Image (cartoon, rainbow, N blue to C red):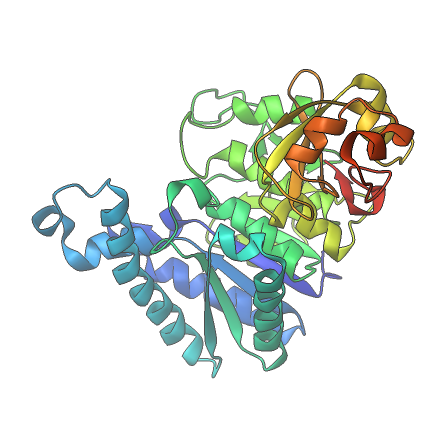
Amino acid sequence: MNQSRRIVVKVGGSLLVGEGEPDLSFIQELVDSVVDLIRDKKEVVIVSSGAIALGKRELGVADKIEDPGAIPSKQALASIGQAKLIDLYSIFFKKYNLHVGQILLSAQDLSQRLTYLNARNTILTLLKIGAVPVVNENDTVAVEEIKFGDNDTLSALVAGLVNADLLIIISDVEGFYTHDPKKNPEAKLIFSVENIDEKVEKMANGSCAEGRVGGMKTKIEAAKIATHSGIHVIIGGGKDFLRALFRGEEVGTLFFSSKNKLQARKKWIAYGSRVKGKIVVDEGAKKALLYQGKSLLPVGIIKIMGEFYPGDPVSLLDSKGKEFARGITYYSSKELERIKGAHTREIEKRLGYKYYDEAVHRDNLVVL
């Protein structure tokens, strides 16, 4: 891990804010550890939660907000808390003559290719000038339908965005366990995972509290995104976790990156873009896409779901409704409705014209 030059560190809100107050000793330890990495010629991006919790503390929510769980209330709390959060980071990093740069992102920002690249350029410029980018979801404007859902997912997307070598997710648990350690005393810490398969995903479902935002399930989903993008992931916890990790101690759980690293554009197609619709394909088409590196032809399409246009990102589903790939469509949903199941020679006859032989070309397709 010492070979990693660009690192994204995700910090959970429960670590930053405990008992309604900022945990200053933890923040100091985090900043000290990040500074050590920077002195070791590493570039560090922080993805930080905690804005809403700090907003509650600053505002005295019990007296001033009737329904703190409502979306407008959360957005107001995030607005107040985000100012406090970045202020805390600024104060602690200033001791080392380091500036911090605040980056607030929404899922919509990353779903558009242009704003995706703009966000990337801003973060890379901050790193180039020696500042520490601090990223959070822009909760003040995000609505439920276009939220990342949690900062674990955001951290994986940011890691892919900046071509990081390593994503470190600091949590309140020591790593990925066989079972929930709070419920099962025989739960064992898993030190490394070669591949995130269905077995690992099932273990994640049973290794954290149900319904908890930012639980182990979301961390494994984030690790899957990052490893698929060619990024190693480590999940662990504790105040001294970062220092221990880079001292070479065996702490946390390491998820090895995929051997087949996605190209930058395909990272965006797979995880940054927001799909506009779904295409259900038959088993023959699925096998051709998964195992033969083929493009999706209209003949293999069974069903079209949603409304979309040429150039839109779409999700590819098998006959059981499971998503297995994403891509950029050459045809609109209305056009595909007319040519689904058609052989290539029949496309022009059905439409009166033909753009391409393929519905989704393999160069614009990513298997998940």
